[in-house]
Length: 262
Image 1 (tube, rainbow, N blue to C red):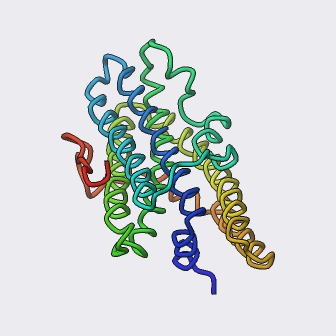
Image 2: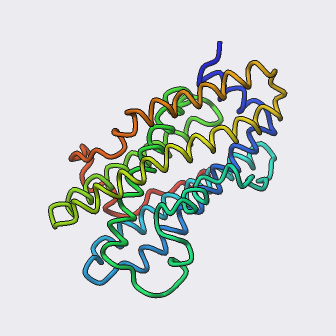
């Protein structure tokens, strides 16, 4: 019987699929680290109080990238190129979601609206990250090879999601509510489609490496499309709600190091 746990266990147990999984994850986290570092450097003067939190977010993402690369090294594996059809960040940017990389490479300060867009986009993508890592931590939190890593990353992703809720609620009170609502909706609808496409591409690559029989590959693809159907019908609403988080000031202070993985 197919389950998230059995599927991921199969991927973890095979060096080639583990190598691809960690390479995709490391690439996405490192890219997020770069984006947040650039945004922190370009925060407009009137919002400079956000810069340390954005920088902390970026430092966490960099740390996650190092963790996934360290997991590869422990297996004696090297990162492999990330297939473009599995590059979640790049595909979101192509849909106009978030701040374009060519804008972040310039030295001009961002606008207040840019920061509102960034936080709204992050609220959506961090929901996905927190959900995914929560599932992995639930299934593999005590795994001898992966447990410490997935618990640490899951904790960080929960912090990132809490920070997005807290800051967006504050900005809504300052008059940005209409923009936040519109960008959240646009981002969520684009993200669920990108997540579907990336999931299908990843499973296709995994199936080829693991030589899955056609019925198994078809069942997994149908499950991914079914999950998208649910999210498109109503599930996306969970990605746009804002509520006061239990963790207040989640990104205050210095980032927590991970020397055992670095």
